[in-house]
Length: 256
Length: 253
Image 1 (spheres, each protein chain N blue to C red):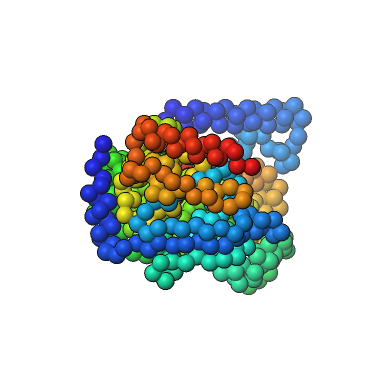
Image 2 (cartoon, rainbow over the protein chains, first blue to last red):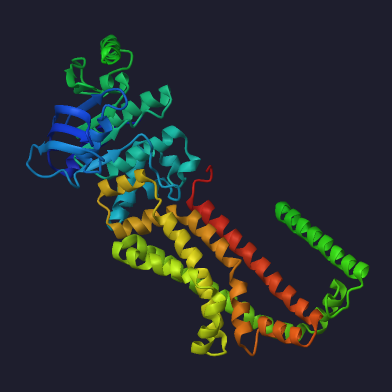
């Protein structure tokens, strides 16, 4: 296993400030059709918050609104950030698809953000982060030469490279097999420690293992659920974790 | 290597069959040599007149190559401008289509009038033929970048110019490559039309003269010199396109 925790601390220490928390309050509709009713989502500073729910309830829309991306809907409400500043340029995003550029090697992909901003790529830092996600042997490989899990690790390194206080994760593990998925949960949990993370997922395992706070999103809005009392990342086979997972699945299935 | 040898072998075989059919047609119909010369006669003529043909061919080949490169660069530049500026897009779209709407036959005489009988007028005709397919294919590619990488770039804080250069352009390489393939076949056509309208050198000029003097064998010899170059150029551009795609796109498709 990779020793990532010390580095995660170093990375957030490098950014030098406490990450902000934020609250999303409002409703969204698409034309006349309601996407989600008025809701209040509180994402605590420096903690993992998960938004769990079935497909089509507007989880991704909510995430896109926070990311400042075109969400193709009318949002009535506000996003309030704890330090009063906008989230613009303070957010990193990682999605279900790795979004790696097929013509760039791992190093090129990890430094893509800097190049897109016109900054000189910080190769030393990129190499350190590539090492932290366990891809040191694949620095100069293009994405097609990597496995699905390795590609998602590269995407994680790229996300860390952005060094943003807020990280938005949209189903980042859902295309991985169970084994790789469990690895990635642990790796992301360690490396993103200390950042304000909003994780959108439809898998109770992601939410229960990683979150400080869990919201269930359904057709009627949000309801909060308490995760096990231990600290994340929680072992996948912990009885409390398994019980919480089962409870969550039960509630997901009973939601109309 | 083996694959290339096979492809070349197959090409030669097809050519040999074609020549054989051609010769057979000439023998069977007994058509006079000034109407349709057989391949043997044309080959003989090609060899006898090789210095003369080479002299003229060199001019035409240069016109084709220069026109192709300039037209492609211009097309790529226009596509970039169009993706970056909505104003330019609005203005250029009709112009680009317009450039394609006028028959090049109609335009070639006036171009010759403007630029004279030298190579410049021929190069411009080639440029006009190349420009449209390259500009329109590349612009199409640039505007069809997958949404995911664009969203990512947006969150990363990229500027539109850098997005165009670092994301849109690489994603548009396959489109550009098919535009180039389409354009390259038209390039020799442009040069020959330019030379027909008025020139003192070049294969087109030579063909026109040979035709007028009833030297069908020389006409065909020039045609072969032109066709051979076109085929070579096409395969070169094809190979370049494949290399670019392998470098920029996901090889697994």
